[in-house]
Length: 462
Image (cartoon, rainbow, N blue to C red; front, top):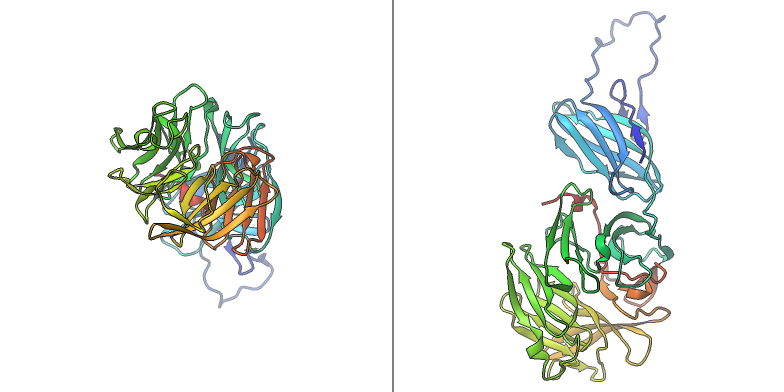
């Protein structure tokens, strides 16, 4: 950890249009007095003091600036990275101790942080430039990925939230929740302790923090769901003894999860705000006419679709997806190998070990599925209407294959982000199926991926 003192200006400076700091010209004591010059005025008093920058104690890619706010006013930080200028949010602060974090920095990176301050009774910005500060290294067991391709047509979201199993055997941890920039650099991380499994890091429905699970299906311990701001000024852990593999959050903060009572008995359960549980749907009685096998009801996805107001529950062993009402537990439709569900168009389509069915912005359903009998991954997009799932787009991935896990999600600009699960690769393709971005994590199991526009939004807390 490195501690660096910022150098406060003796008097306020101003920013010129080209971004340089302007200072007053030297005074010529030999010049005759100028009777027309305005009377001398004292510069405004500084409103901050005792400024310091240090590496965050828990995340080495975060720098923390602290100072004393001498008077009320607006303050914010700025810095440069890769030739671009970035700023923290402008905040109005009262007099007293103050802090702000610098987010979005890679490890082992030198940056110069400047504190900007505007007194509440003035409009002139005071600048307090700093010497260079350096972020720390990544944890020794957190490998860096390789950026294989980055084209201009890639989605503009600057960051991605995902998880990574760094252990020698996938699904047994240790796992990290990480944020990447589009250059493939880790800019934030958090380890899941106890070798518990993390596959579904998410942005909370409020948009103000991140959340992730730590499941114990393969190892002893207590399964939990965590919430935290990026600087960990706020964090919480909720133990959920019945938590299986998957979970999601409703708009009001209630948790939906697959409750693994046994390897044969799975339930869709809702954790209420008061900590009690409500079982919405029990899979085994419904699945029994088709299969009573081990893991027949085991889920690899529990996902709430707020537009359709259904929970998408995906069972990989029986290659079936059901849509369930989140309040009543009633099945709205079923898709896959369980008989009697939606038809396919074309009618030769089938699902095989499908993963992460999820809605697109256009209201279609997107998922990844294996090609039966082949080591190939297939992405399918369906429009569901009148009892039929009609395929409207597809993509067959060549070169990579995840034996387990993986997903495909539609990005806001229209591209599709594909996660190859145990193969450790992320790939972004255009609607025309051109590959425009690719990241390789060398066979480490990847979890759910979420694009992020603003890291500071995830630091607001609850």
